[in-house]
Image (cartoon, rainbow, N blue to C red; front, side, top):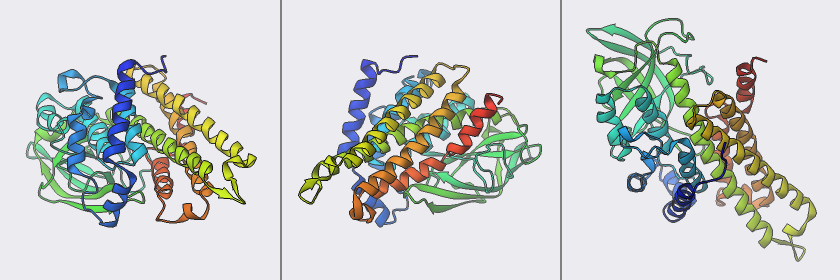
Length: 380
């Protein structure tokens, strides 16, 4: 498995990094947060991302994509993570977009996926429920057959980019017990559908999320994605891809936090001496560098395993998520501590990385969950 970047990938990484540095400094996230912006991101910045081709990267050419897979996607999300850019790339492209690409029919992909790739529409995947705890098949929302279509009742929480999204890919149970693998179905629900209530939620890292309440939402037969009651595997595959994309974002965040800390160690003086010269801090910085590089190798391996459809792809995703979760939290904690008192203040930007690290750690399964999943998949 090749873990070095190709010439095209190196160019993409450099372009993405330059764009984020220019258009999405962390100060922009602070401004959106302080203004309590309802959308939580810039539509114009997201449109520029689409024009650069980022939104087309993970998709096949038949859908208007570039076919660069997850190996290309993580180069973009790493740049996004460096600037903590809040645009709905992960939510619209890798979560809801992949669900449509992998399971949608031609009409659904033309109506929703095409505009999402063009940056004209934002999609969101609504699959989490209270008490589901990383189990995509733990679904209480019900889909009842009615009049040739379906009626949905239930509630979805933490819908990433759910506030003001144009449509939602919603998981619902059309048959079986609340935790059964059989009977899981996916539906496309346009925003503004009668009996759909969307409530804005705020995460600690200031990202746009929403609570969805479906109180008898009636959908036509054309709203069903894939086969009725057979979407468990599809949903798991989508979450694995989203996990890898998030891992790229985590790499960017921990790398930026580390780079900022190194600069601080080389500038801050105590007792007329640069604190970067203290041996204890050198050792801690070296440890963080090692953890970041180990995480990077694991993430690249997971991305390529998914692209090549390797049999151990899910194992490698869990290895990468467990390692990156631990590494990002450790780097962020150490970054704040090495910045001293100023690092504890809201006025300093380093704290934004610590908040984002906490959210990323728990998204799509924390380190403990993925170590357990690795053991189960390995039949320990």
